[in-house]
Image (cartoon, rainbow, N blue to C red; front, top):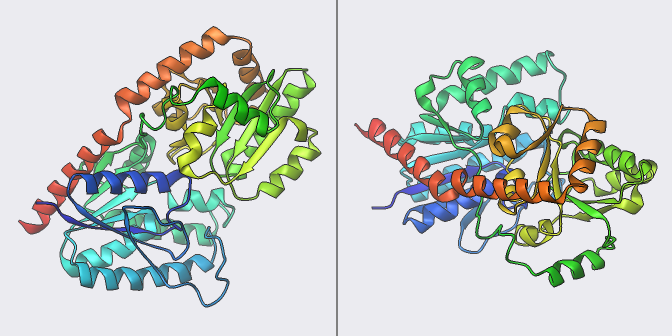
Length: 398
């Protein structure tokens, strides 16, 4: 008999990036296996056909505010708590599945009230994310307070699903979570949707032309959030070095927010003519647009957050240049092209070398697609989730 699962997503679900894909795919597969899944989330975001989503009321002020590390997020989470309580009272779930720290904290209160298990879907350190977004200073009073709150939340879950091995190690060492409660569940990919053979050369050439991408240039693609900690400035600086060296390379940078800011930076660096920004890309169009590329890039610098975008690159057989972090190595393995973190000249050199070696690009791309198919499918991941549901539910009801 299927379980009733209440997912709490403290974000504007659905948006076309990162952790939203994880929530989407988990919910879809759980439903496919006969479980009832209800997602409670913020009032903004895009509805998805087939998913049962309940949203908070809009804030009475700044209704168009984009959620991020900000004092306004406290108001969003108060509204989310009230909505989750309302839904839990009506639904009477068997499992609370809390995404991110706020979802786990709200879920813990509800789980204690209903005497049911709480599964925490951990996508990175709360305090580290706030540092990445420059919301606070390291080792300041606010940092120490958030760190204590983070540890409190981490200790509340019956099981924690970590999106990387490094996150699992961090929780075990820095936060002293018993290893028995930590389960590695890396981000995964739908290898049928992200299949390089779905699109014809004619379709791809026509799309490149419509975007103004020169047909004789090698194309480097990126799809994700446009933020400094994702390495967007480093990509643009690498583009400048390649242009200065006379190398025919074009960058297609897809995602949001701050498109205007990075367009201005590209102009200041003199690379506006060899970088194309698309803005927000619907997830459904991601396989086609990424298939335009010859090389993919990720310059994310986080040591613990997942980097699910790379799985899309891998499934499409795109050779990938990445900063050398444990998370990137977990995904790419020996088939990645690694550059020391912060080495912009290294990024440019790695791209140049791949652009000049078609055979190597093909070989790495084939290895990455096989790695994605063998190790990172959602069908395997959902079995891990259900196993943890079963363990936690048996323990709670025994």
